[in-house]
Length: 456
Ligand code: SF4
Picture 1 (cartoon, rainbow, N blue to C red):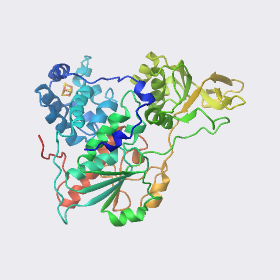
Picture 2: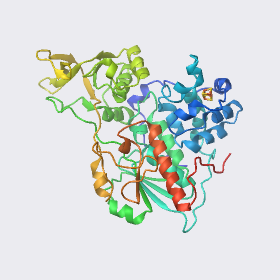
Picture 3: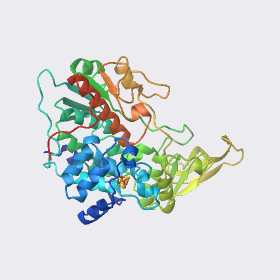
Picture 4: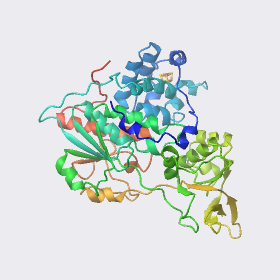
């Protein structure tokens, strides 16, 4: 296969300076860790996984040396099991629910074992895990996906396995959604995300980049030419503070900044700089940790409420503290200070008490670069393109979380654009559930709980 998208990545990117926080296990380590699993009958780890991967079975297959079979068990439930093994918050999902955790012992390293099995499969495209069914005239359908993130990739991939034709339209030059552009690089480099995209393509999924729906192709055309349309567009641009001095060099939206680190060889170097990160969620702590690991002289995370009210995962916040991130809480930015040439000098903050600014407490926190991790806008334009698709008060697409069905019988949706921003694994579950629902509908068969198709 011509690995088109991988070949397009610039060879020099800031993210390559970041270490792999959970490196790939070797065979001996993987097999001995797999041997620790108790193969619990009522395995709590399965229930904690949003895609309900049969964890004890895939681990047992690693223990017996059947790595390809192990990957197949994972992919049957989670087609993007590779990126999920790298980015899932396993501490609060499968590993947090492992019986060893309840006994206050080290849980099974489920994430690392999952990576061991799936990396084997996605690096070797010749190791055919699934044999997609041949298209059958009159029975096979055509689907179009808007956005090439995890929800669309799962939706398109599962339908391709069942013999349907799936095309993904992506407005960026790079597919993969947040996995390629927005996940902290110490968890997943863009090239690893794109290798997984190539693996999904190898199932027969077509991906067209640089195509914007509403501009290059109208929604009406998709509805006329395809049997179903899936919206998997994620969220929109980073939200802004709308304070003086914000517009100018070196104040970035957090996801835009992560994308620069992952894909842009001209991005500002971090080493030796002072970085201010505004926000207290998982995106904020991701950016803060990345900058600390890249050699920033100082990283300050500024949050308007108390530390215990930060929505970032505790293990990530603790990791940031260990890496030297400094937390300034109960502080709200009121502006950015720049010199006469526009260079960023500081962010001005005011102390917050009971949700209100305290007069006379304004002060400057010096910084060379600021990242705003205060949320992302929603994508209203897509709904306007597809009649019957409604948005809720948050600006999210209204869809049945079990089937992805929207107010338009031909349109389905999943991922961040319906849930407002959750984990990659939730987006994969949405795409898979919508694919299962549609395939069952088209083949007049019950909705399967698991795909089992060809291959080893
Ligand atoms: Fe294995 Fe832990 Fe899952 Fe039990 S809960 S099956 S020990 S991973």
